[in-house]
Image (tube, rainbow, N blue to C red):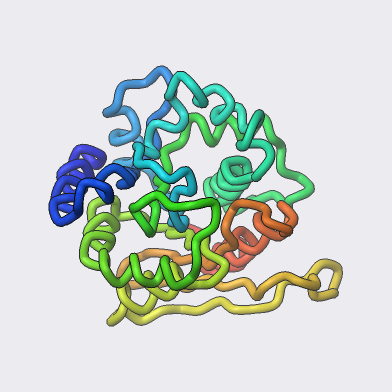
Length: 262
C-alpha cells in the first residue's frame, strides 16, 4: 500500500508547518488510474520491472492538492488523460512526461526516436502503466520558482524526501530540473556513499552536436540497481519537445546496450 504509506509520511511532514503552509502542501506519489480502485496502481507498481519516478520542482498553482488525482479528477482529468486541452497542451508538461514514460517503458530496449513516437501508444502507456510523480518542493508556489527556493526546500525537507524515495523504491529516477538541484540531491545526498557508473556526453544528430542542448547524463548505481537521469523540466519554456525527450531517453538507450536485462 505505497500511497497509504505516503499518506502517513505526509501527516508527519505537515506536523511542523503553520496553517498557511499546510494549505499549500501538495501530496504526491503513484498516479491513480481512471476507473480503477486506489489499490490498482499499488499492485502494478509492486510487480513492475521498471518503476519510473519523475521528480519535478513544485506546483505553480499556489494552493495545496493531491497530484495523484490529476488523471481521475472531474474537472481536469479528461484533458490530462488525453494529454490535450488548456494548460496541458500549451505547456507540454504532462505530454512530455508521458513521452518520456513511454520511452523508459519500451520493451526489449527498442526505444523509438522522437520522430517515431506514436501518441496513441504514449497515451495508452500513460493511462495504464504505473509511475510516480513527486514534487521536490512540497509547498505550492508561483508560476516560476528560483533555484534558491528549490535548494532551500531540499535542505529543509531532506529526511522526508529521502523517506518518500525509500517508500516508493523506484529503479528509474528522472530528475526534472534544469538547474540540476534535484539531480545533485539524489546523486550526492540520497546515494551519497554508493558507487556509480556514469554516462555523460553531448547529444548528436547525424554527427552534429545539437546546439542549445545540455549534455546528456545518466548515473547507474549497481548496488541498488537504480538509474538516475538528469532531465530538463518537462514544461517547454523555450525548449523543443525533441530536446526534452531525447536528453532523458538517449542515455537510457546507451545504458541498455550494457545492461539489456534492466
